[in-house]
Length: 324
Image: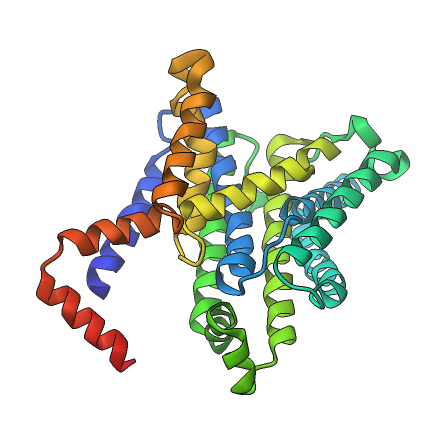
């Protein structure tokens, strides 16, 4: 099974490398946006799917990353240094926000993060001398990596793809580390986890801060991609869109955020041939999915796989599960 999984991942990476070849600028831009939102959704999935906490501030952390990167690169700081500062800033803000916010849990935490996202939007819109206000910031340079410019959309796509693959590897490493097992324990049964000596508040705070840092990286990439940012790009509606990506793809599954981002970003583009009806069709498909498979697309795939696979394999897997 591991060998099959490695082959599928290799085929997936090859498909991502080949996807933009021969495509127009708009398709390449859309694919790059999917990579960016996948990175941010991965961070939210760590908070929601593994630590079991609802956050409505992920777009706000993308905004922090985008504005910090924009201001620094416009001042002449190299993108890599600006991105590292953005990621660190989002991690620090996540710690500061999470420390008092995680005294409450679940929907109470959602209200706190909602208020933070709204407050950040107001600050970005009103501090015109720093952020440009409603007019935003424009003209951020695209980075040059190893002497290769990313001014063209195709080159920037491959640069974003490299960042995406590194982020996915880092997330995979985190989930396989003792931290990842602690996050899963928090989600499944926090009372039992605490009885076993796990510091619940510290682990939840760590998951929230790491997820915020992933949002900061996505924002740092969005700034040179569009070369124009304004407060509306990081409003509450975008946090809800990121939450939808995680839920639709499958919260708590490694590939869930990537699949969910593809549905939210790419599916509406594929449905544009229906003209004015594409939003209705898109919304109906999402509602049907949530009704019949609350665990998202990957959860639905697992149900179908278990339904059609040989019964003796299902019983064997169940037995292994009980032994674990």
